[in-house]
Amino acid sequence: MINFIWFFMIAISITYALLTGNISIINDEIINSGSKSFSLILEMGPLIILWMGILKIAENSGLLEKFAKLLEPVLRKLFPSVKKDSKALGYIASNIAANSLGLGSAATPFGLKAMEELQKENNQPDTATDAMITFLVLNTSGVTIIPTTVIALRMASGSANPSEIIITSLLATICSSTAGLLLDYYIRRKK
Amino acid sequence: MISDYIIPLFILLIVFYGIYKKVNIYDCFLEGVGEGLKTIINIIPPLVAMIFAINILLSSEVITFLLSGFSSIFEAINIPQEILPMAILRPISGTASLAVLSDILVNYGPDSFIGRLASTLQGCTDTTIYVLALYFSSIKVTKIRYSLKVGLFADLVGIIASFIIVKIFFL
Image (tube, each protein chain N blue to C red):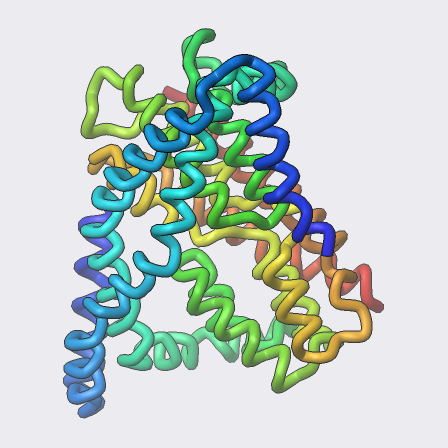
């Protein structure tokens, strides 16, 4: 699927640019995109590495297990296929907690660790498991309680009440997450 | 800002708990950083691939062209068409949709209907395509099954829900 999306993005972009005579802009973008990727890595990489260090302390001290235990009753229902002693649930719990507070970049290392743990239970390493899909549906539908970046942007552009969108975002998030989980559940049941 | 406290307090809790549980927190940290470096190396190839494709997609202006067909439909059901580029970019690139949001907030004002709608939209969903690409490729999964379908469905529900909720909340 990613294979096809990637092809589609490149094919329509270059074809459209050829038809409209914008090809020199595309040429510049192609030349620059490599360094753009690396500057993004340099921007977010150090924080991810630092967080992985901090997370290791939480992991080895058993704090993560404690945290997961709190969310376990809910997560167990959502992830029936994950083994009871897996560390994955703890990482999923931490990823959701960090994401929900608008700490997107802090959530990513938890999420990557969760995928790694889920992969250990995977019999076909090149194929996504049910649990991985449920986790990513939950992750991408964005359970956000505090959309920090949006509030900061609104403040910068002179809003009378920058944080007024917290409630609307939360309600919209609940709708999208619920819809995603229901469709995921329906597809899993149908098999 | 409350969010300024979250990370420092989180770290404080972690190191306190580690010491309390008699764990060598310094060695743990070094071990984690080492693993983090490997993770970053794994992320580089897919990131280069996605940034490349997204950049040429945005600069080709093909999105604007594709939207010109949709805009009349959205006008008919009374959805401001300025929101469309953002709704389409949101699942693909967080940075790109944030740039569109910032543009809308400056041009229409943060407290306008479209300003509130765009803010809600940015806050309520995540970059589905980017996250799927990043997470699946970090563990070398290539068969992603129905995950994209479900993820984009949730995004669509989020967009529709944002529109209705903002309409109701800010009459």
